[in-house]
Image 1: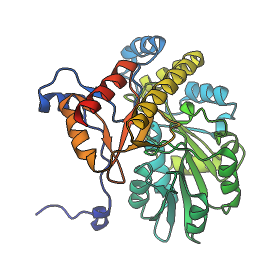
Image 2: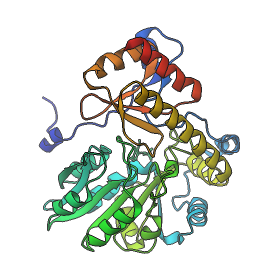
Image 3: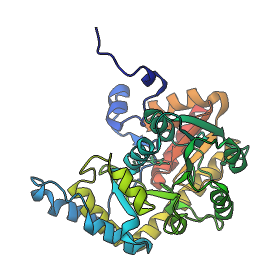
Length: 359
Ligand SMILES: Cc1ncc(COP(=O)(O)O)c(C=O)c1O
């Protein structure tokens, strides 16, 4: 007889990460597998960051400093936001889940666009909130009017991923500010900016300035994407100090580890390299988008490090054919749509060449 679990856990679909390279290599008997499935950076951490990590390996017998003073100071300086508004965690996933638990409870609800990042649903359900998924519009963007209309008396939190995963699209800054203005003050608007650094559209705007000044706005950011530190698990949020105090009541101690802190502090010092990465990413996105469009596939306008494309009923054959050729991409929703992370130029070319073989 198994233990008696929470019965409502049946409503929570476990997060499904992209397939690991080693697993695919083993299954298909391959030695050279490329993963374009988890929106990671194709580039390793900056060399100075790798040196900082190596230099601190000998200190790992000690717990990290839970207050993370150096990281908080570095983020504060980088963003121009007071230190008391900065909250660090074991990447944005952890901050999001902690927030969902703190904002949830019986007789509460959360609102988020769909499809979007899966953790908003998982967190809401884990936190006993009723979750309300609002379909994106025909251009695969958040439908802000519909989201506003979906707010209920008992809504405590709205999640807005901008640019959005998995669709790669963005909502313009002015529209998002208008939406935030229209939301009641007691509702926390969480703007997930995991991909903010990649956005190049002239009307894209980070909501960090609003999170730095308003009470009911929180922006989450991560070192997992443009900084290439997904394996270390570091992220941060900008929001009201009083909210941070509440969230910390249930945040586990030490979720930013020693190496994560030193790596992030060092990474922030290299904004020139970040700019170069962003430019290389924009070229890769341009290559993938135009290559797919010229082959007749619908591709959303991407402001991220991945493309979202419609392969219709060919999608399963393409996904399997790519796996057989050592390329991992990600089936997403709705059925028929696939998400392809921008890799290094030879990887992107290999993806298009493999696609041509399959189709
Ligand atoms: C929109 C979005 N938010 C958050 C995350 C989580 O990132 P991390 O927990 O590594 O910061 C991801 C990861 O893919 C994402 O796509």
